[in-house]
Length: 290
Length: 276
Image (tube, rainbow over all chains, first blue to last red; front, side, top):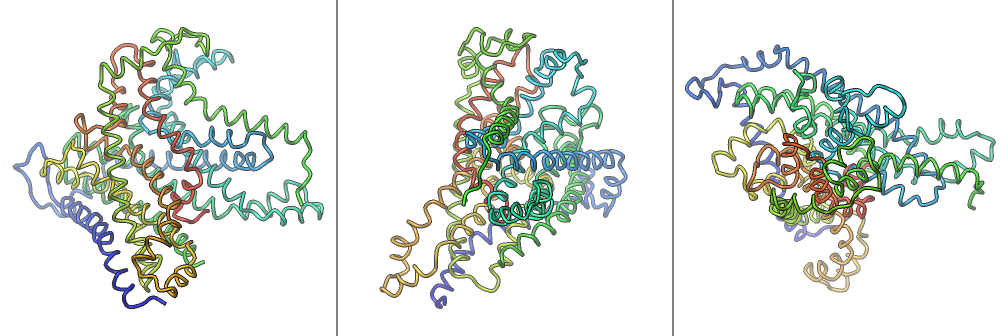
């Protein structure tokens, strides 16, 4: 039972954190909303004025918005599919008796700690260069014509880089979940004559359902705002082929200096992220009660 | 009872695990090897794997031509500073929510979490303009503040889940023996909280070191950390692969090593305790 004294102390200790996060969340967001109703371009400050919802109309009907929304969805969807579909078998494999498992684990997890600008540039040059890249050399060994990744399939190239960064995350979380699975349950199933596949389907997969959901939601939140990888490899191009929503807003804000329009776009991004966050917060909140 | 495992199965799973592990690690290994090649060898086809002329000249060039140490120092100060300040704010808050919870604690925790889910690009414009008007663009202080606020929810959450696990009975026993809050804090709580504090510190150091949205948008040269320094290789002149590899190896080596020590905490910190 907490005493009166600890209650007061508790509130005092909590206040700075709450106040700071409140300011950090509310003030910039309010400013974004305010700017989004203005015609405001830093290159042309004379014509500043209230335009109501004009920026939203402009942003949402701009063909670039639809293209970048499509790119964002393709990027998020593909990376999710790749990391879950490869991460699950990889986690199952690492859960087997493996000699030197801790070393393999280190190798698998390492890409997650590489800063985004490094992984993007290393992949773009050392691996994906159409003539001298490692991939080009491997495909020449196999007798396949190498493709010029960033000219022929730029979005796919970005997807591969981002997937490489997030595969360790999915694998590690699924592996952690697997290791908390009840061994006795699996033994009982085996003794009852269940083969490895039914055991996986009826015991392991349901056990993994929640961690997979968590991986999907958390990755989605980060993947919606992929930025550095695009910034250093393609700059959103060629054309708009690799522009996602985050990059589109960046280019409107800091390349075209269109504050009003970028702010409207920023709010659209906030709304999209909030839809995902809503589900994630509910899952985590349920966990908090247990 | 341990299950009997056939040696054939161990052999197969070991082989497969090492193969895929190696494949995933290959880009990092390749970067490391390339950093010791000459620029011509780095670009050569077919590539050389181990039998090339090993040289450390790229490392010297990276430092000499672009002042690597300046950016490394920025990274250390920005990641370290923002993490330390975040800890100073978060420890009291997490302590209070774990040991003196109220009816609203759960709501506050979830609200803090939701601030982390706001896409940074949604507030890029106001932050950029405020930073411009206050002269904070391209300053270490500016980056420390923004990274600290950005990571604060994760720090609080991680600490909260660790503090939650400290058994309350021990505190009550100490109180029965007449310990004041101060003594309780120093002699009972601190020793039990140190592992949690250490892993929170570690994970947030890693996140701040690798942060590449705010650093790319708010700094250019004076305060630029390694993320921005490496990004400058995206518009290169001439052959640069070996130099890029050397710079990359230096930028990621310390943090990959730190990261290896914090694998378990990573799961916990990044899933907000939803997977342990």
